[in-house]
Length: 240
Image (cartoon, rainbow, N blue to C red; front, side, top):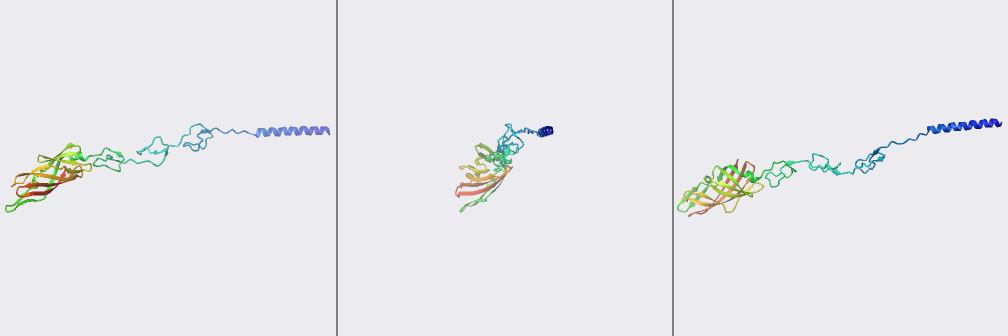
C-alpha cells in the first residue's frame, strides 16, 4: 500500500509539472509597437495612431491659405475663410478712372489733367447775339466765328491748363473727375464788327468725359459803346 501511495504521488507531481510547463509556454508577453508622432490632440498635426510623442507637434496658425488671394498668409496652416479674391483695376483715387472695387492696381490709371492736354477738334454753338442800338439799328455779332476748328490745351502744372483760343490763352482748372472750370478774371478779344474789337470776360465750366471727348459751356460778357453790357453763352464740344 505504501508503494502504491508513493507511485501515485510521483505521478501526480509529474503531471503537475507538465501542466505547469504547458501554461508557461502558452503565456506570450506582447510588446506594443512604438509609433512616433504628435500625441497632443489640440495640435494641428495630432496623430491619433501615435503612442509616443516625438516633439513634432505644430500649433494651429489661422489665416488665408489660398496662394491666389491678395491676403495669402504663407505661415498659415488652417484656412479661416478670410481670403480676398484679386480685383484688378485702377486703385489711385486721384485718377480719372479710379475703381473703388479694385484691390490690385493693374497700371491702367489715367489722369484727367494728362488727357486734357493736346489738340482737340471743337464744335461751337453760340447763342445768336444781336446788338440793338436805339435809333441806329441792330447789329449781329458772329460769336461762332471767334472759335477755330481746333484748339490746343497745354499743361501749366498743378492741375492748371491753358486753352489756346485764336492765340489767346485762357487758364482753367482740371479736377480729378474731369471737371474743367475757367479761372476767374479771364478775358479774350472779340471782333464785334461795327463796334470793333472789345475785351470779353469769359467764365464757364465743363467736363472731360473720356480721353476723346468732352464739353464746355462758356459765358461771355462785354461792354459795347452805346449798347451797354452784352451777355451770351456758347456750348462747345471737344473730340480727339
